[in-house]
Length: 311
Image (cartoon, rainbow, N blue to C red; front, side):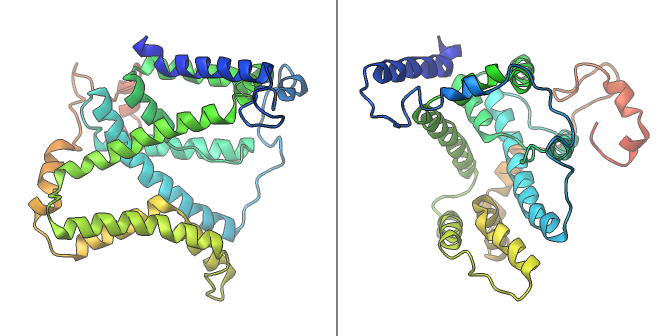
């Protein structure tokens, strides 16, 4: 039961929504009704194989590239923070530097492929999946492999993918509350390494969190607030200042490195001992937790590995 608690919860709530819809407990058009999006199943075709350039070839502009770099930077910072968190949830050793480099590299390749396929979004570590590990306590690679196969099937068999699209919105919202709540809790758990009785640390934490929530909201209400005279620069600054995690991270990093504080007070010593991002032994017969199931010896012999520490 514990292994399927999330799936069982979704199933039970979906059945309840169906019953309430059947007896017209919810008014017509209510997001919890199961017949709001039911036409999607009928409208979708059975099979469709996506291919590069299906929505037209990608266009490149200076404003678009520079603007997207801000989003990529935010996603990179977010992914790097998820890697040690996921390892801690699974009881695995902290990821070595080469494993982090490899993860960011594959996210970049995935984003390039997504752009060619015209998906409209990039690829990075999905925060809800990190939260799902914390809820279900399942961190097996086999589960991720099965999930990948399932998503490939969804992308080709449209009827199958449409079934997941018609999940009532309140159920999806409830899942998001749980998953993002777990992510927030694990993020805040990193504060155990700093001295929370220090007024310096309390100021940095409080200001970084609050300002990162206020500034993006203010920019939504005032979309033309940033006026530098350069349209490209305006769009870049708007994207940067609208990304909460990037704003909070930059402010926290700046304040933590400018306001005087001892290494013990800042938690640097305790964090270094806990998250020692050094390479695991990968020579001889000894294998790393972060090795591929097969082919690691051949990959380490590649010439590119002499320049990029990824294997």
